[in-house]
Amino acid sequence: MGFLHLFIVNKSGGLILHRPLGPAAPRIGTNEWLRIGSTFHSLHAIAAEASPVKLPGNKNSSGADDGIEQIEGGGIVLKCLQTRTGIKFVLTAEPGTPDLDMVLREIYVLYSDCTLKDPFYELEMPIRCELFTNAVDNLIERVEAGGAKTR
View 1 (tube, rainbow, N blue to C red):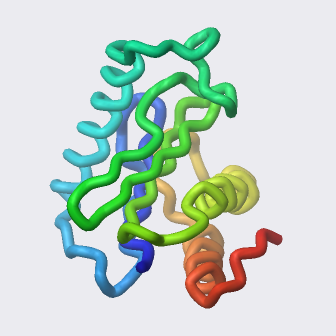
View 2: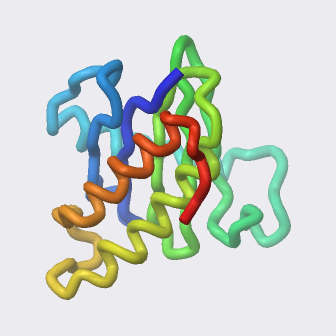
View 3: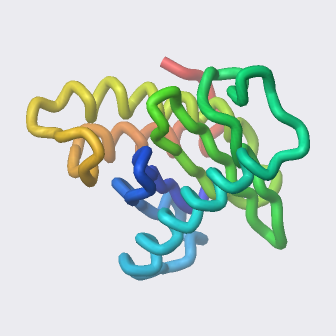
């Protein structure tokens, strides 16, 4: 059990961050990550439209647009948290990895605290914030060590 990758897609489908989170994470090139990010964004939008069950107002419990929340496949779990502003935080992990929802919510808090408060960060642009990167690494280490408590 363990975390594999984190990728963040902006509201227009552009990949703004991708990073491996563990040693078992497959090595994927930057161009492939760009393709994965935009493809996931498109699939998320299609899933929201094609869903036979519509949530009230086409919104999920956090107020974001309806769409893909989790995909489970051969040896991988993909979990997505879409914010009200349309940014998608996507975490991939091995099956049985605990606390995926909590980790995604905590990554969103770290994004808000570290990245959005950086005076040099521009919205919708790639994230190059060392404080955010270090905070995500610390969170993953803490969760994998069994201390899944949020701040």
